[in-house]
Amino acid sequence: MSFKRPRASPQEKSLSYEEEQAKINEVRNLIGPVANKFPTECSDASILRFLKARNWNTKKATKMFKETLKWRLAYKPEKIQWSLTFKTFFSTLTQEDVAREAETGKLYKANYFDKHGRTVLVMRPGPENSNSVQVQIKYLVYCMENAISNLESDQEQMVWLINFERWNMASISVKVTRETARVLQDCYPERLGVAILYNPPKVFESFWLLVKPFLEHKTYKKVKFVYSDQPQSMKLMESLFDLEKLESSFGGKFTEKFDFEAYAKRMKDEEKSRCDLNSCNDQQTSVVSDVGSEISDEGDSPCNYETGSELEGLEEMERLQLDCKSKIPDAKD
Picture 1 (tube, rainbow, N blue to C red):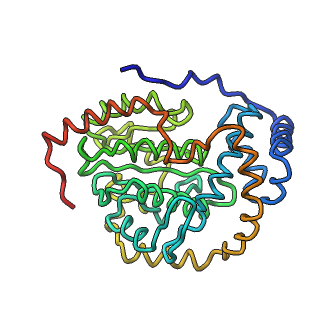
Picture 2 (tube, rainbow, N blue to C red):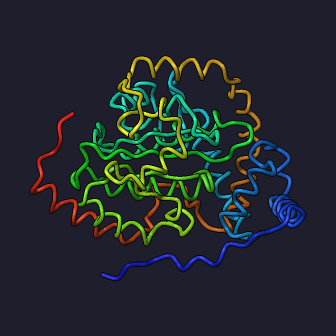
Picture 3 (cartoon, helix red, strand yellow):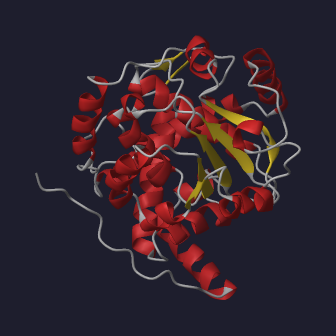
């Protein structure tokens, strides 16, 4: 089997403020009138993230930006809420779906920031409770949108804390892994500050060697391995987090476990405190066809997880996963 790997990333450029602003203005001009209809999505900070993701290539950044905007108009990620049932171009997600995905604590937003003011998302891939790729990805998008809405005013990025308790190769979903990488890299560029893999088991090394070549260069550079029995690696945790607030499962001193009921209340309270996004409906509907026609000439959106995967090497992971499932009993929640 031949695997298609991304081309090597060129050395990242460093631009002055004036040069950055010129690039931002060039992308905004390439986007066209749509930029004026979506001032938040087309802000300088937003365009800057796409430019960084494409190493300041304005044409590539513009293409990526348009594809993401088209995805947002169809997928409506900002409308995935704990308390509402909603429909998108793709499907319907109920409030029960969101709550059910969250109940095991497999992915949630921590109630603290890191020392740089970045939102912290905690992932525990061991206690998986869903077989639906579609619902799992929608819950991922919900968590991303929620985390972004709670970023400090001077922050654009977040931290991922990944705990491997109860994880084994049988826990892997090839499709979910593939679409998670696609959504995070293509639809949320430059949102990841650092991803900490805490105490990954030895068997994870095989999985990582397969995944790493198919992640963008910038992404895998942000992935850090931390082991509780290695004082040198634990210094990273001390430098990033207040240990009094950090969960004990990550080497901190906070011993309370994930409380689903308390988390559900916090999510509902946060939704109530945010402005009503439904007022954007008419505006979005009026321009969706215009945006779609602009993007359609440039190819399908990479954020449409219904399309085929570009991460062809993950097919090999599926074979390993099946081998492991025949040998390792599934962990029970």
